[in-house]
Amino acid sequence: MGESGREALEGIHVLVIDFDQHVLDLARAALEPAGALVMTTSAAGVDDVTLIADVILCDLELIEAVGEPFLTALRRKHRARGQDPPAIAFVTGGPPTDDRLRAAGFRSYLTTPFDGRSLVAAVWAVIRR
Image (cartoon, rainbow, N blue to C red; front, top):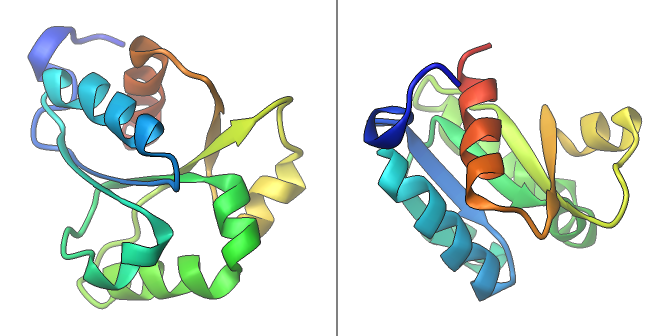
């Protein structure tokens, strides 16, 4: 990753969206010690999202279940402020096809369950592109 400890994601705003509170808690526990500023929410709370993120982490199945308008609305909110953050999908089971990821608007994915190092590395990778 090139950097370690608190400096790895210092000042990076990360929005984590998942129905599973355990996933939200794990993401926060992994990202905050690396310096990220983290906001977590469920899909139901997307209208309350005030953080304009540098990176969005979201459950792929949630997006597919809720539908494209959810991610579209979230991205429109960011673009209105001049941002177009990369999105990383959380996936359960085997790796998704590239077509499935692109169709849902994601640049990358992370298989759940994930460990903290993998999550920090995934966020690092998309912000460094």
